[in-house]
Length: 268
Image (cartoon, rainbow, N blue to C red; front, top):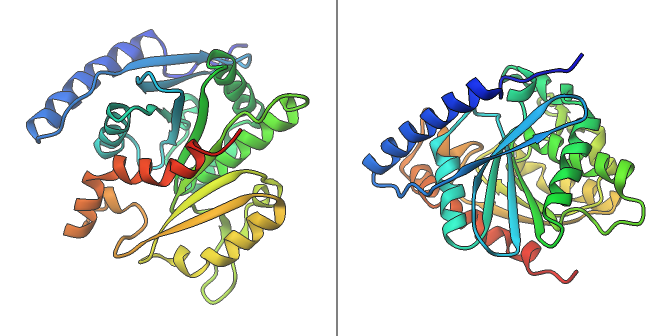
């Protein structure tokens, strides 16, 4: 039986209407609303994963794996800003195709095979372009699983599929007991990837940043950590957002572009 997602034709029509409405809200708020289109990838499992694509003609595609906060105008505005500066950006909700709720347990329910098949199709469609993956919070585990699952299924004799990953305030631990060191998701010990971590200083992850870096590097990754003073996890969409966090959210696209530079410009 083919598994269908809610990204069917009717859903795409609804999405188009919502995008139009969102553009109106952004314009009224003083934002520029870049044009975008949808990229739909049908997987062998029958699941269809849809990315909202903010196009640019450079050789780089940044794919933002999102969904932890639902749909946020700050993320889409950042994607539009990145595209305006030459980095094509796809915003991809990885929970929606599986009808999964916004719960920490949902991320582990996305099948590894689907993740690998999706990334391979992205590679085949863009054979000459650099690809950088972006994630926020708990989506970091899905990002790492995507790359490692692709490597296990398709990586023999093929150049690495991505040039690196940008993780914003990654939540890669399984359980965090106060006063105890975190137990990380097993994918952390299997990851070999160039990555940049944006770590807000006013969050629990700040105190464990060096340990996470050591664990990732021991597995074979190369890791840079950029500390963000005065910010908290999910700073751009918090209900109790501060003026400093609001200002950072307005320049989120530039923040991501700056952090991505070592990944974009590294030698092949």
